Length: 353
Image (cartoon, rainbow, N blue to C red; front, side, top):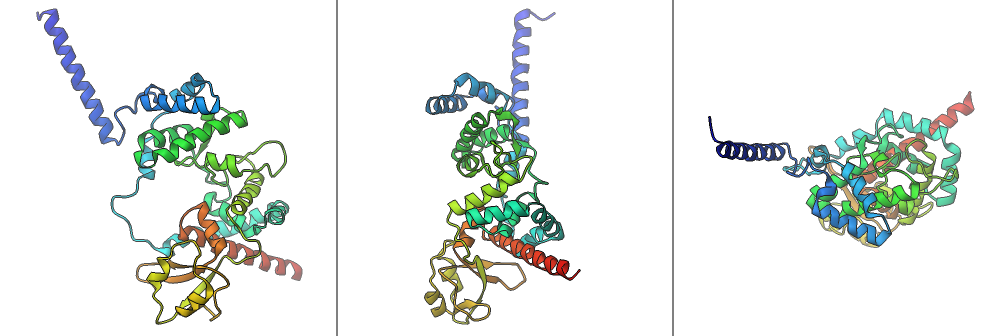
């Protein structure tokens, strides 16, 4: 029979081997070695708690209790991590995801149901109804796909286990705690996208605090169950970022044989090219008119197809503040145009009946 000392030694070795195996398993699954532990046990989390508590007069124990419930979510890391090899961008493929019957039919019905609220938003904020509807359609298919990730865990995962954007998501985690206090909710009660975006408009917590409005005037902001607050909040967000009432969004562009498109595109997404400069470089609208104002030249590439060129005006740029992608902004614009035309046609048909 082995001695007690040798038995303890053998147990200690086996325990260390088990620990090493667990750590290796966590690495293989894409989890940090500390993922199984509570976030509140980690030094960087305690530093975050102390900082937020001091700056915003929180009880540190309250923040500690909340973060002790948060758990690392490997799916969040997988979804936010850019692919090792970049895929080929295709405007036609991207466009097809959003310019479909589901979003056009759904948007028409949504506009019909909330026509009064959309008209009021357009009047108060200067943003056309079709743009508001299109953003909700692109973001969540009119509330059908708002996300089912627990926001507290998603933001904690990104704040403490995703170094490339940790600063951004620590600010959003801080904003979540502030939002929960303002709305008298448990921080763990929110759910949304893997990146922490919430409700019909997919606002991050900081955007809710900065731009959300109680548009149905019932004393609270609700992005989960009623789109009316989302309608007003999207309009407010766009106005705050510089939306110009009754100004154009974009025009299809025609390039001359002498046009150096690469140089013009390199000027960036913010409109800086005045109509005279564009004209000198052979760029007009598709029907030969000069640009309607200062613009950016947008290239929408599709492999194996001719690149589409557009003139993006200030309002196009404002849409990219919602999602910093020219593909996104053009999808919103084209869906908005499709919805507007559908509504005109439906109105004509109704008159003829």
